[in-house]
Image (cartoon, rainbow, N blue to C red; front, side):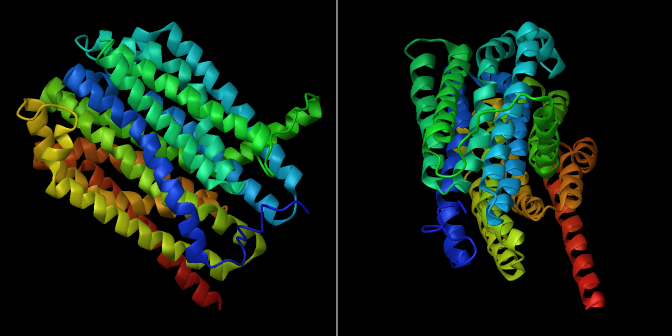
Length: 456
């Protein structure tokens, strides 16, 4: 049986805390690097273009987050299925699932790319752009959108590379993307003066680099999970469709998690525009640059726990599964508190990284960040639990809780909280939505525990 480099990472025997730490540190650094790609854009645009530039990019954010969500959905589903195949000694089946996942991502991102490039202004208006911001949004759309396929490749491949036993290479892909984006942003926006077009082009080129590094690994360096040559027979295509459909079902909470970010940006933009105008959208845009960092903390915890949980779930080793979950939950609470402290005690510092303090947009952000931070512990916990449900193939609860936090609770919170608490209520909408989701998960887990005791 081909094994997953069992000499160095034995997922069924090595101490669970050591395993989790081995995955978590490089995964967290890699995830934060991915978030830095967009944050560096915001910092350079904020100082090189102004708050209008940040607002314009925030209007495009739903497209970026949906593409990321597509990669996370396919990558998470593929990783869970491949983990279980590897645990059962079916290495070829695991490789086939990886190949099918990459093929699906290529098709699924190229089609919307063509449509967006054909109608960039219509896309910008559909996303909520005002006429004042429209030229900036169109520029960003045209120069960024062609990189969406590379973004999806990298998002999926990072799951696979970590599962293949190379978390440091996965971190390297993310770091190269982040560093390249930072260097190119500075060059394109300041010496060359390309403005928002330069920011988009810099991010696009950096994503191309990261995506190509990830594909190179899967083609030439992978120990077990190398890509296979696809078969084009009717039977093979039908089998592939069935497999990718199952992967997408498992990974759908990952897409829903990113759709939460997209909904957060889209609905938030509309509400801030209505109550506080373009400056409000600019302030909210700064918050949305930080939100992916919070999401990636939770995502790093979930993805670090996933190979350990899925592998031991495949072997029926439930004590190791539960121990991994406890470690992940503790890490989620600690990580959420650290980020919350930064927003509560240093909102001016966080705002000043993006735009000049003393402007109306900056004042709105500084006053709103402490309220916004009330969501973070719940936010990270929810992502961690949804990742756990995915890892043990509990698709229904994972999907239900992802829908609750992304739509059922979030949209009404944005609509109702400003009426109840004014401008502070807009900032608190995310906290209300995430807290209600955490409470729902706690009730579900308590119900399952009571059921197990009755059966016993």
